[in-house]
Image (tube, rainbow, N blue to C red; front, top):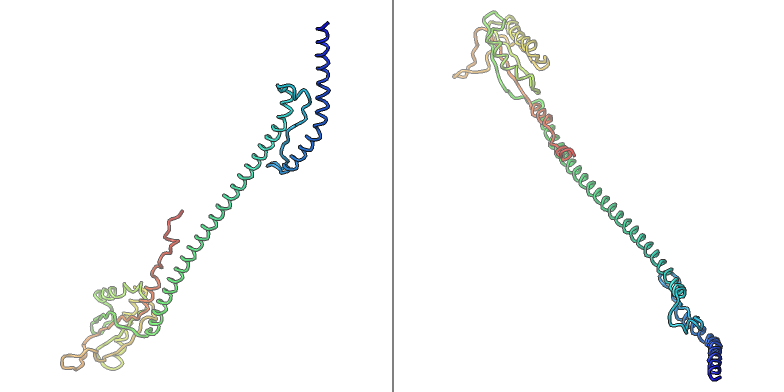
Length: 296
């Protein structure tokens, strides 16, 4: 009888404890709810994902408080928000990494473009400097040549004797001998590449009057004919005159002019400064820096 009574008391206590726990949990729930609201108001700040911080689940029930060992579903239910938030943070981190890489690549591209533009500007500056230097050299050359041209033009009619050749003829003849042709070849051969010269041909003959003048003219004409036909000397560069029996320009020791028997022709080569101008203009211009640089 005592045993049955003890068993009944134990059952009564076991049945009373859940009811007491239920009433205590219901009475404590408003306070816990107010505490939770206060915690939420104090933790209303958002995290990195822009969402409020996670709050622990305080409603566990009687068996959750009484059972010292957590159940598998309970643990999963408690850790699921954490896993979701961790995954969300991973996605945010990946997105931020992509944005950082994008910004870095854009910055590097901007630096590269700026460097390229700077190099192009330097190249343009170097080319402009070279062109300015070339223009200065060209202006200096033009000024020098202008001075030379002014000097030449000023002395265009100032001819100076370069060489003088004398051809002898036998009395009464106007045919050139072999020695005369050789002397004319030596004088006229270099003239093919020259400019700014004239040839003065003067014929002298013994005798008197018009006969001497005619003979001296024939001898001078034979010399001119040889120069024009054999050496292609332009006719406009040759001045011919028959002097007849005029006295020679040279004088003897006593200062008296003398007449020479037989016939002779004096050929004088006269030059001005046009040859100097031609040599200056034909000189090669200095090579520019672009021409000196090897091809790339």
